[in-house]
Length: 130
Image (cartoon, rainbow, N blue to C red):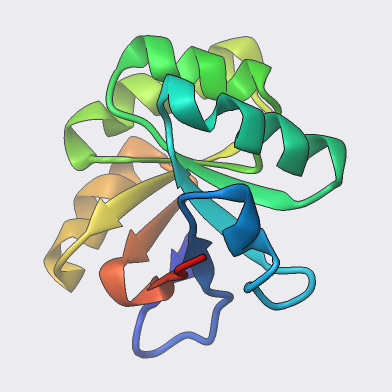
């Protein structure tokens, strides 16, 4: 299991951006964190084309499949979608890792038993303004 933002484990940070200009304000070789919506499609495609690592936050099954088709690195979602997302990833052989938002360590065991790829705590996401 991959951990982002856990107090015991060093990990990379995700840089939450809202515009193309904000990419310039992120460290080199960092992973950008983007909310899935139609307004961000140009940003997502630009990042993919330029080999920028992307963590895409999704809210439903359709968006999970779009995320895979858009070739993002991480698909970030809430715990309620974890089992379905992991099943889709295994069935369709996604390249992206399924990452679930967690607030407490007590959530890790359940997610590990579901076979999700990783978890992310809120402190691993840094907001970047343009």
